[in-house]
Image 1 (spheres, rainbow, N blue to C red):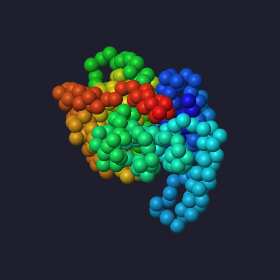
Image 2: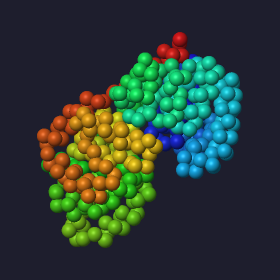
Image 3: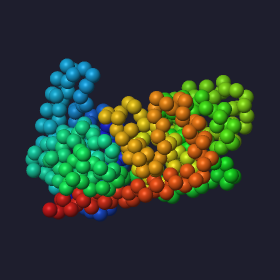
Image 4: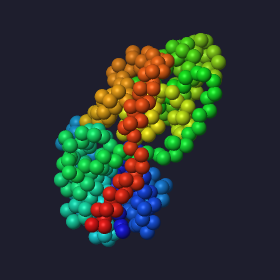
Length: 362
């Protein structure tokens, strides 16, 4: 069997794509897999690192703010579709898998029009533009949230959840004292609003007697370290015992295992990890994403009492007080843990891969 997988632009698209490819290889060791991505985007580096071949297209996103600049974008889209058609004629895939992003739109549209069945994977609670455009051409659509019938035909939807790093379940708890532990993550690049709120709230965090692990993101790390060095002696006192500041955390299984409460953005991958691990969380949706989809992701949990929402615009005033009140409330932490765990979808990548293979065999 030959499988064509396309998508990318962000880690939120690339990680599910690679996870699905890995699951296909486990179920079908003889499978041939080819990726299609967008030139200059993250997938052109990450996919080969995972051991798969990828071909890049000149496709780009539309400029919504300056529509008159989209003539060249349309030209590149036409070139990309022409290129995909040649790739498909050469590779002859049995099925195409689209996970969202610019390249996915061009690749899956061309594949469907050449008679190749396609499966789409939608990570968010508010469907992306690419998948909405492709919905009528898809054989099946794998989703991570309930209620996606507002975007896709109900008979095509399969609730599979999002693929997550399975090694997260192997984390070890190492904090042995009785202090509560707060984990703050804003993604690999960091989250400015969260960082500013935490920096301003350091005196309160110190006074609370909790352990804090703070991933600032590489963009903000140096500036935050300088700011911490200028803080009051109260904050500086025994800082190494209660506060750990890192640009990036490579040992996330252990970090999650030690956390009593997590502060996070509301990206699809992050939420899927929190569900799998049953971690009580305060979600601060990024306002800088298409269709405000992080707020939709967060509200799917909040409406089931499975997470707490602090809006980005309110983070400076509300984030740290909300976190300190919640982390000391064992009853509320247990409720959040129980409810978010119910939303977990284990083995998502394998379940999606099984659907892909079913389509290919038909």
